[in-house]
Image (cartoon, rainbow, N blue to C red; front, side, top):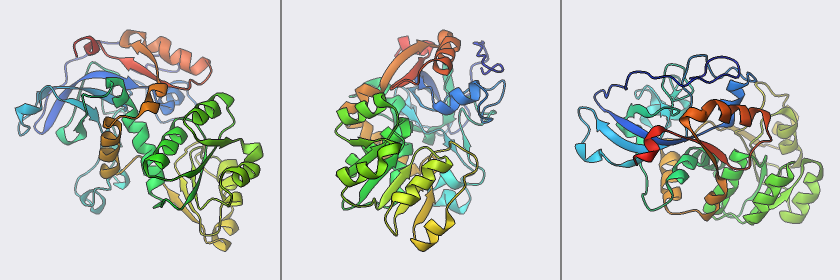
Amino acid sequence: MFDGPRSMAVREVEHPTCRPGHVIVDVYATGVCGTDVHGFDGSNNRRSYGQVMGHETVGTVSEVGAGVPRSRIGEVVVINPLLSCGECRFCRSEQRQVCRARRVVGVAPELLGGFADHLSVPAANAIPFSPDVPRLHGVLVEPLAVGLHALSVTEPTVDDAVLIIGGGPIGQATALATRYRGIERVLVSEPSPARRALLQKWGFAVTTPNTLRLGIDDALGCPPSVVVDAVGITPSIQAALDVSDHRARISLVGMGAVRLDVDSYGISTGERRLIGSYCYSDDHFAEAVAWVGSGIAALDDLVGRTWSLDQIGAAFADLTDGEPPMAKSMILSRCATLH
């Protein structure tokens, strides 16, 4: 539990009840998202005291509620943490990420998150995951789904030239999504040398914010027709508007600032489209599950240090005070030794 500023506490609570239509998942591992760390250190207000965080979870179904086939017991699953009303026009069109009543497991304080041994979720949110790939790759499905959705909202084609601003976890996920979509002209702008080195290892062209135009000339040969801003601050969105082609589609997925100073002339006179991207649609999450399940060699580089649940306080302190890790830190529940 998030127990106050820079404090995590491990507590024994009652085993979750398996309600009708739900399943109990024995958590194997849950990734630590940057938004979890920023909630822990107080740099954002998106986490509440007393809540159980964690929304990047893989585990095994151990119980099923009424109406759920018993054959699901024993399934390895990845949790889609997005819940919604199920009745509005967005939910009916499987766009639950824009439901006005949406909530995210491990983010909404009333929903028990994945930093626990057991988790109760609607059966439809426990998505079967391939047993043929490393179990910890399942933790990476959720951030990859975010990147896949951020790219997909621009409706890219293989002829697009794509610029990704920010080479952190979501920028990396978006870069991998461009390869999955068959797009060849891709450039990632990232100030961190270590993150640039990782992207280069995967075969992506990289540049820095200070050499952005030169990087575009060298790697793309033309202004980008698609930009994904995985940073979300005024300088990053301004860079997207400054260097993109007329009629470019710009996806804003980064949430670095609550408010941005946007160059409205750059949008209107260039007929550029600025598109918000939040979480993922049901289709894109399911697509990410299948994509990861097919085997992605690069994901081995993104499986970082694992910590036991009892070490979660030390894990968060390390992530808060140390250098940002290149790979995903993961919390193993006590059920990990059983599955």
